[in-house]
Image (tube, rainbow, N blue to C red; front, top):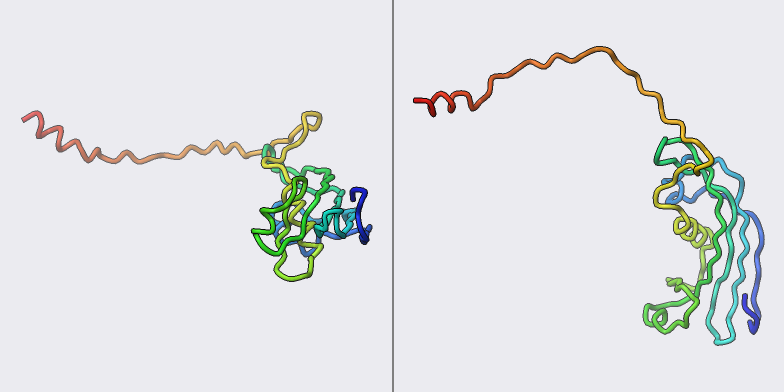
Length: 162
């Protein structure tokens, strides 16, 4: 956190993505090493309760070109002000994103999951250095015979001639 902080607490450790259901919906799989997390919670010089942190790791996404697995490195830093109302959020100084609390508890796993969701690309794909391997499609030589149906307007054409 910035200098001028009053008392703050810091946490460093690993966090598994197991149980992050919203994030899991966007992943190819959840078989990744734990994420490294650093969090610091306290008050800034102006008395604002804040949570600053960093999350780092690798996620497995689905390539939108070839539908294969893409390793996506994540390094996300964030600075959140802990607020209890939208009015309080509107009064925040620049540099903070508001985190609206319903009670006094901060659920770290949910905050990290939100930050990871914000870090995901809109259209994940392999880098230019990695070549996408397009899926193999069967080339069925069978041709489909389409029965020709009579044109429903043929009777109208006959009436027009008369």
